Length: 155
Length: 372
Image 1 (cartoon, rainbow over the protein chains, first blue to last red):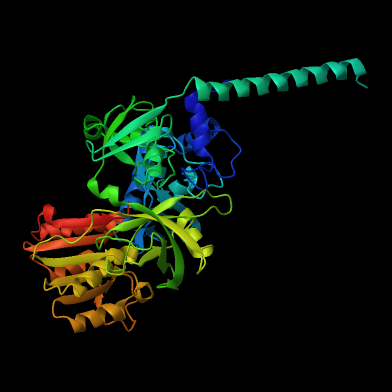
Image 2: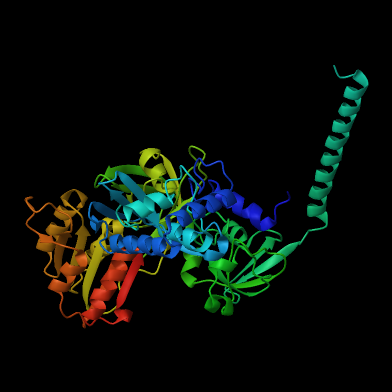
């Protein structure tokens, strides 16, 4: 199948490049479409709306960013730290613009889970349903995020 | 087994395809040289202030660099950092799809373009800030790489070619990393912490960014005695020419421009009162405390207030505790007559602006160097 120049550019941008040293696909061999479809299906099965997940990510990012690197409690047993970084990173979907490079590391000590949230990562989920590939340091696995932010009632 | 006649046919076909491909490639190269020959084009900079004759076909960014006009760029001209913006008032072609995400409505109205994406195919007129015309590319030698904390180092670089630099305290250079482990060369901006009077050297403070291309090169590959390349000076962050009392606020490597400004004004016999709030997490994130405390003892106009936001409650720290914003608010309830100079992460700057404006400082009196 012949890819459009836009698709070719996206595939290039998602791999390790000037956009991101590590790329956005990690060790995942699936295509961009396969990753987004599967993650959305997983999210749908849980019944958690994408909007709610995005808001939880954004709230955690902002709360940690506001403390300039000091550890902050997001939920019981869930702590987050903002790591500053110089510069801005463009979205691999060029038209989305630039995002600050800082990252928030969230650690859920009760469930032994962690996530790395960036402003670009939030945008990729919100606008493109892209949670990033498995093995990528910035992947927001929907099930992991739901568990960390306690988005489902405890069973 | 494949019969010989079939193998022969396959060989002929492959050979034919190879020769055809080679001929087509040669034709393309010839066409580019002969048909797409744009001849010599003129780049008019700032309405005749400089007129450059350049071979047509190159990017505006590289054509300017070949003529020693260095527009800031961090991505090497690939249209991803958006630092290389200039005003193209005549001769710029259509805005390319690569540029679109980086140009706001106001910039489009003002004919701002990414110079790396503009091709010089005819005479072209541009406007650049005057200070960019004094930016030069420098070669230097790393004299020392000194750890200031576990994740911040200070570099002292001796200038080799040219041997001197003129800059204003608070300005920055763009340090160029070398290729390593498959990473391309990149340029990153770092403020100078040395005083402008030391024209033969520059000093930088660099904080390690996990997986950062340039900082990993600085921390793991750059050795004392090695040659380094940078361009500069760049920037708009510097002390104003008023006598308003100063509030400096910085965190981490945001110390660099403030330390440069303090050394500069001390040398010049400053009398403006200045209070410096430096925010860190714990004592192990603090540095230059001895130097700044000494400065506080030496001159009557300076006060240094370090503050820790994550220091264990039972430690021996006797100084201020809490977020730097809270400490500033406690010490400076009325900032209506002060000027603020801030350097640090975007989150810290945003929060400090809120605190200062709440205390009566107008936004036109707040100057900042955001790590963004």
